[in-house]
Length: 107
Image (cartoon, rainbow, N blue to C red):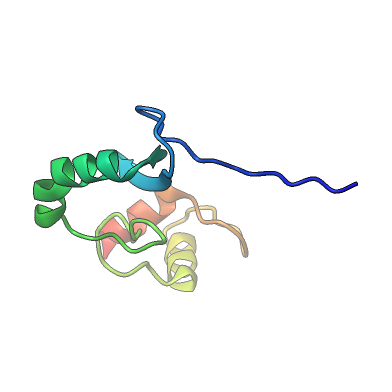
């Protein structure tokens, strides 16, 4: 015996059929909503002035750099400086944010 299953996506606002999933984000939170053409047009119209004035963000999210905004510090240079400054730092692995801040302040 075979079965046939139909999935009907309905608009999350008014229940109308033939909806499609729309993704958007605000304050770092991603949202999805199923909207039919009429409600999708309303959303696009409402967001249009904000989208036109906004900057696009790369798909991977916001870029992260060092706190100073420049290129990340060379980890071996940070370790060498920390040792010469009398700070404890491991040979491998993560360097504490405090040590990196001190290094950046000194350079």
